[in-house]
Length: 375
Image (cartoon, rainbow, N blue to C red; front, side):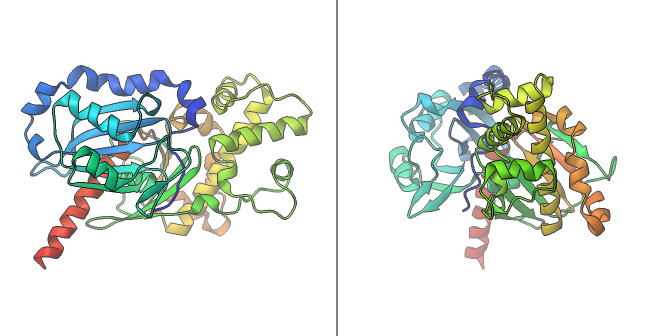
């Protein structure tokens, strides 16, 4: 397990400003899914729970892998505000009560790492202890994985309609079965790598702590405002919600002006609307550094399967990203440019991706245990 940060975006401030987006995500399921319809679906008896929990919202689904189908079927799905519940067990009870189901297994994706039986992460509202969840919910099995591991597994099931492509060297050609890298700025900066195979293997990483590489000029001037000389500053200090605030405040100090924007979501909105020069420069710096970082990851892991930049807020600023230096910085790797040009780059709004990824991870591990027993 690795602590990839909360990929839900910019934490409380950002989530409060995007309630409508979450209502849009949930609405189709509220209209189409009812307890009666779930109970009538084939495979519901063997269905299990998969969840993706962050500091602000918990997404949970009832999942079935039906015979002859390689894609997990989502029988029911809900998004819950974490602040409305006393613990994750209360969310699970609310979900199961609504659909009158008693699943026996839970795959739980969340930011943080498992240490001595408890998930360690400062962004979670309440402790998550798998053994206690098993007892409280009468579950046979609760398995925990890092949220970006789940996202990486979920990329195998992406709906093309939910993907926005920023760089497409293989337009109108089938996707290549190569290594895939998922990177996502949120409360922190998460990175995971999915290697091809049956089943695929996923590596969670601490890549967000790599030293920030600032270019000579304005970037280094901003860097000088962020950290003392000869001090380490990781990428997640700028490629995150709190990092965006730091960069904005540094730009304002360099320009000798006040910093009237106090939330990352407000900075992003102002930049996209081009209402303040400092917000625009902040988001330009963000996109440039994100492009360089994604390019480094592509080289490091040989990401011929593509780079997926995940995060709800990114899907709402893709026009800005497309016009920024993101792609040029991704490609600008000297003699490695020809390789970079062969790597597609996509933006994906994670939504259900973590839930589906956690489900596929659990099924892969169940299949592997069965194979080990047969051997």
